[in-house]
Amino acid sequence: MKEDANRHLPLDPEKYPKNIWEKHPDENSRGFTFFTTYRDMGYKRSHEQVAKIHGISGMGVAYYSKPCEWVKRAEAYDAYIDVELQKETVKTLKAMKKRHVDSTRALSTALMLPVRELLTRVNHGNVDLDNVSYSDLHEMVVKSANSMTKVIDTERKVNDQPNEIIKNQHEGIPEIRVALPKLTESLKDKITKEYAKIDESNDDSNN
Image (tube, rainbow, N blue to C red; front, side, top):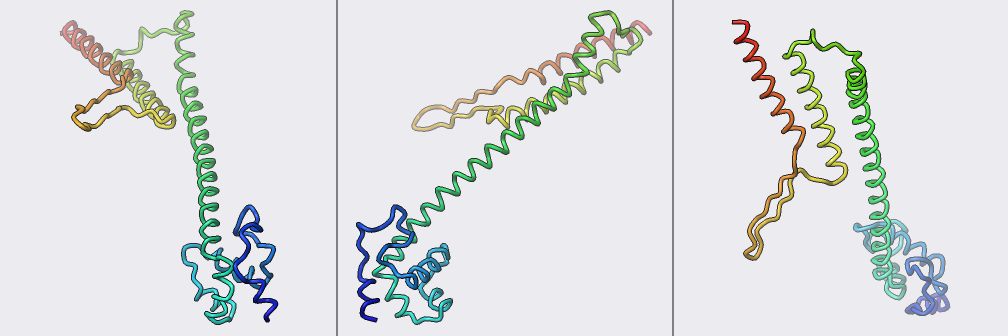
């Protein structure tokens, strides 16, 4: 027992491995097993729990814990795990954002396909819109505008671009609000007003 005890006098800090939560050269397997149990408990770790799990006394735990610097090594391990978890979280968020961006682009492309095809046919004189009522045209345009508004809003969000930038008042600096242009909404309003005028004109003509 004396030889074993001498091995657990305060561990030589010069001999610690790079990651101090790993096995010290002067640390025997029994002591390191107790330490790994303590280390891996996380924020719920305690000497009492180690003693209960391994069936040893509190003095038995203290025999290993203090000279082998369990607390210091466990805290270093916690810091390491936190950094690794942050890296994994960032990696996951980046992958999720890429999926959202790709999905938004695909949706935008899909919505524009019929629009492009319609423009191509109109330019080549292959579409006859004379028999389409103003109200039907108005409804088609408004629906397209609404769809594009949602796509544009989604695209801005996945690219971390808010619809409004706000600078709160601080140390005498007045609050500044910069509203980013919402071209789709503006265009939709103009189209609605123009078609309303056309409908009123047609009603007057019919009367």
